[in-house]
Length: 124
Image (cartoon, rainbow, N blue to C red; front, side):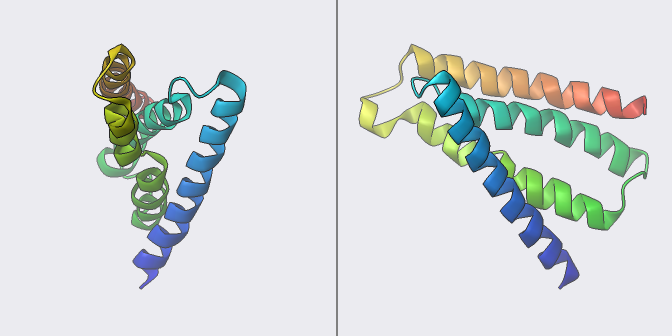
């Protein structure tokens, strides 16, 4: 039951964080491109690589913290389903250049940031 509570609390905080970043990005940068989703996906990619390195490979994070932060917080913060919807844009009549840019940035930069986070975690 403790694990579920940790995931639940972390997930709630991650979802609220994602919403806040998305709203801030929309106010600051506009809504022509899903900047908020991109920001949380890229930050989450780096953090999950970093924390995986610290927690799983180096044993520096407790299982409870990993459950709370990686499974709960980052699971709710990084929004692949939202990314997919914003990319496919069902109401927009197909995939356009901005959709392809979104795919390349989220996937290419996301994978690069997981690798960078993992490498950074090895040097702590």
